[in-house]
Amino acid sequence: MPRARITLQTGDRSRAKQLHALISANLEEGHLLPRSLSDLVVHAERFTIAVRGRKIVGCADLAALSPSVAEVRSLAVDPSARGAGVGTQIVEELRRRARREGFEKLCAFTHAPAYFIQMGFSIVPHTWILEKVFTDCLKCPHFRHCGQYGMIVPLDDVYAAARERRDEDGAEALSAVATTPAVRYA
Image 1 (spheres, helix red, strand yellow):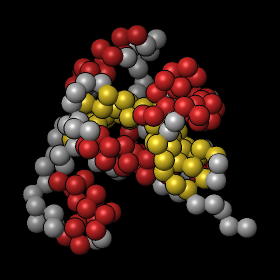
Image 2 (spheres, one colour; image 1 turned 30 degrees about the horizontal axis):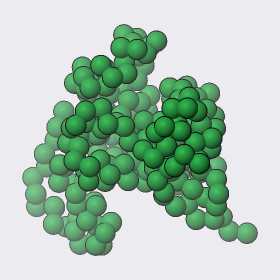
Image 3 (cartoon, one colour; image 1 turned 45 degrees about the vertical axis):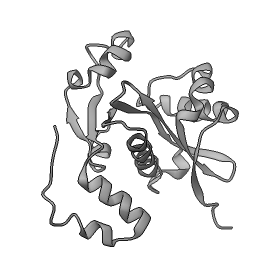
Image 4 (cartoon, one colour; image 1 turned 180 degrees about the horizontal axis):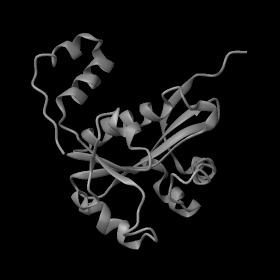
């Protein structure tokens, strides 16, 4: 029997227990910070979830850190869906949402920087994302000996905009940026 298709949806409070189960299962790998069920109930609508049938197989939270910076939080993919691009699809959807909501930068803190680099993020010192430091890091038990990499991507990136247009209009939009000089932010 063929596997059910994976679709992206916006989270809602009725899925908070499933979100909590997926995030908790990924905690054992040591790549996520814990999230309480009550926190997930309050913030469920900020999540983009990947669903196969009735099961959540991936998720991530788009958390506003300031009026200009948003963070990808709690990115988790069920082992049954890994390798299929689910995490990348979720991050790209969060990038589109962040741009629509007027954020200038999207950041992430991760133990796997190569994963985010392939999506256009750059490694930066934590102090370049003071919004995160003052919002979360000061309260974290790992503060000053954090093993995570700070990652950031500007949301005005011409290549990201072309990827969005390609997704909406087809491959011809990507050729429009082939002659546009690259702009990299650190």
